[in-house]
Image (cartoon, rainbow, N blue to C red; front, side):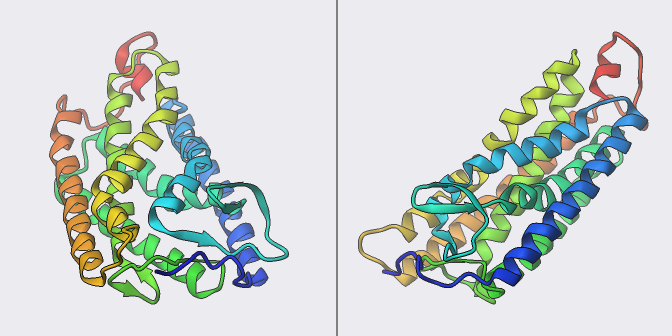
Length: 270
């Protein structure tokens, strides 16, 4: 069985790229979220971004399950360690860039009644591509690795990870849109801070359960890991399909533009 690469040297140049690049993009994303919120008179988009960033404090759970290790030799920018995995400070900005960026536009389109099931599938594909590119750069650039016996790797990146990430993003976006539609007070939108980790682990530890168990079996089997990866990919695709079927429920009132009426339900939801 592979073991954590605790002595693998960290590429400090790649760390700098991931840190400053992702935090710079996060500031841009927050500015866009503020602008969108001002237009529609809602904190919804900003809260979606902040919820993703706060949820990154639970990243060690994911690392333990998916056998991910951030290289932690001298020079690492880290702020805490859990489950034996030091956490880089760019995980919070990485969550915003990878997950919240797509989710806010999906939720916005759902709220406006302009997103179809086919459109959601397209967003899932975009998210898969974004996650794959980001992680392939980080992995091959020497910042971290998935050290477990994963199957179906592309440039050292396990395909199952990308599909699960796409599922988690669309699920969060759809559930967030439902919350926004049903909210009767602005404070209800704070539920996003719970919804993000719930949908994150629902997808990754729910649909991803077969591959997580296979990765950590006492007796390693490459064939079993491959089969479990296929099962987890299928489960993630079912989640995406299920989320797509929820869209007509969310936009059942069929409005094409947000309605803002002080003190009424529609006004708070947007």
